[in-house]
Image: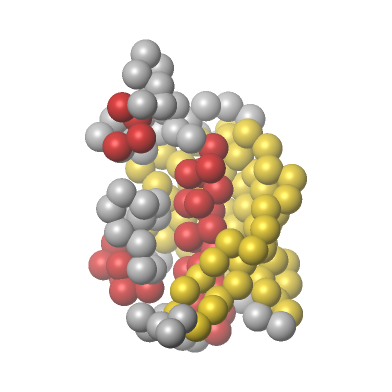
Length: 146
């Protein structure tokens, strides 16, 4: 379990791009289950779409990547510093099964498939009320910046 205060210590993201509200479960080196509460107050809903608010698919992928980062940091036993950035390296097989709307709770389950030469490969599935809304294979890497 991780609350928002612990998440803020791990992830550099802030409003409006921080997309993980809580970690429900974490199994070091294996998997994470995290939650994003989707509200009408999200800034992207004003334009996506004014007549029918829908969470953009890329933001579902970003939310899963942020959960994956939390799993990676926990697995390595590290807290990233200001010189460390965690980047997307690739996305494969992204599928969107149904729209995510205000009031939904996006529950992301991400498992670590492998970790080699600083590249992490994950499988992510996001659900709303037990229904799959998004799935993808994610590749991420950590880089030190000047």
